[in-house]
Amino acid sequence: MSWQDRDGPECDPAETGAIDLVITPKEHDIGGLFVRRSLPSRLRRNVGPFVFLDQMGPAVFAPGQGIDVRPHPHIGLATITYLYDGAIDHKDSLGYDLAIRPGEVNWMTAGRGIVHSERTPAKERAQGGPLFGLQAWVALPIKDEETDPSFVHYPADDLPRWQDGGAGVALIAGSLLGRTSPVAFFSEIVYADLRLNADAVFRLPAEHVERAVHIAEGQVMIEGQDLQAGQTVIFREGPEVTLEARSAAKVMILGGAPLDAAPDARPDQPRQMFWNFVSHSAERIERAKDDWNNGRFAMVEGDDEFIPLPD
Image (cartoon, rainbow, N blue to C red; front, side, top):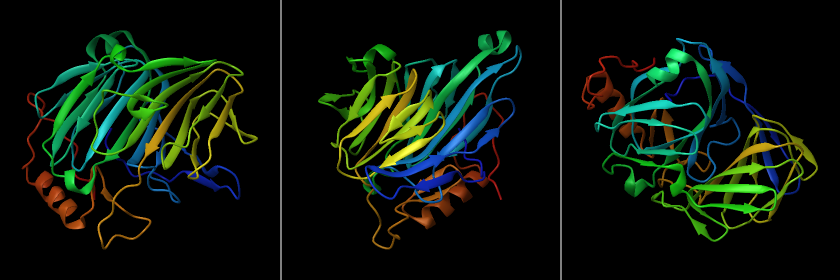
């Protein structure tokens, strides 16, 4: 998805315990699709390398409707699209043209620059149907910001999956509880799809310095707090955290090692962000803006549309 400036989410800091912050995103209708953005927020710009988190839907499109995110550029990050329901066609300037469906992973590394579009596939658009999922942006380490762009697709069966009582886990990227995903990244990371049966209990270990969970569906209690669908809960470093499902729930676990920062960066801003550009360097973002305005990015073959640089 392309960055769009919107009102920031509500952030409720916690005084004690494992919970550091509860983020309640505002819901925005972008043409029949409701989107909730948790990161970046007013009080927290990132969790580990995750600098952006959008929940798409759940929504149901009427026949003839769908999403049309026109070609747009990225630098300095990787994007991860993960669906619970529906389908999205991905096309990019490297020539990849592939639909993503529930449980699969589209992992696009922008590096020094890539352009892509995201649209509802023709079949799903013709018949109408659901769309529900998450898109995240993961900032690259400074030394890897200018790596060559790339795209990889992983079928759902390629991901490590296991049951833990009434909890089912699919490890999208990184490591968790002794398992490792085949989805490679440049720094320590965890991104996992957690499905909880009603009354299930899951214990999130302290193996990653920065951790959060996003509740995509259902109700979950953490440290006596009842959390609702759409909320993101960020934890303090250290203690194991117990999640207790009040209903069947879909939860995303995310985090990893703290972002590295340039020597002149503020402690609360280890990365610069503008539109779809992420970098440790403000000058690099200005160069990307100029490149997009002047047609120096490679484009998506066969697609003459594009999103203009915002003011």
